[in-house]
Image (cartoon, rainbow, N blue to C red):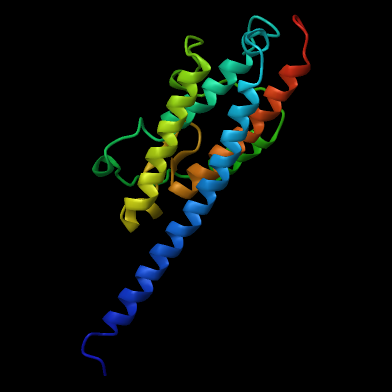
Length: 196
């Protein structure tokens, strides 16, 4: 019998699992970041008039939708905290159901209210400011994936006002669903006329 209880083998297997998790998260982030960059490039090709036009007073412009994507992500990430400030949270009762419902809403065409004031666009940022803020989110997420310990990668250290605690993987899936939803909205704005 091995006195070490198979420690070297178990440790090696765990290290492989952590690296496999990191690799999967990196690939997911790379795919999301490429889509995010494509959206920003598409938005940058809009004239100022198209970028800032609101189809109705209560509806957002293309620039405001883009800002909402960046600030919402920043809010879910907790404002880009220091790594040691990320503390795992227990998922509340029905947390899985709440995450599923949020995914359903994001996949639908339902118009819903923004769940937090901190996710609202200010309307005061330029597209360059929005891109810089969103780039900071990406750099922080990349660093988190590259350097966080296994616990902080696998456990729910982030939070959404509707779904509650989220893991890094869940944040990436949610961000991609959110991007897809609003990219469709942005493309629709291209075809809308004032007052439509």
